[in-house]
Length: 84
Image (tube, rainbow, N blue to C red):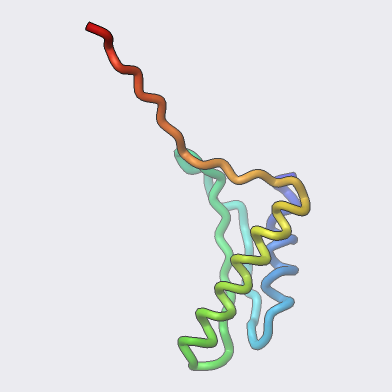
């Protein structure tokens, strides 16, 4: 499953306009996560357009992960209280 994620990220980014995909890699193991790096260029000098495209990409990543059954883990902490 993890090996398919870079290709999935490429598809998601390439579906956006005006964007040029550069790369997507499984970069490293984090303390609580698998870290992927995605690099793309928004081809218009408009910050609002950039933010709209970034949001569309992020929402599509969530949708595709859900569709593929890829679960996102969230750091949790258990606190034990001493009695007495």
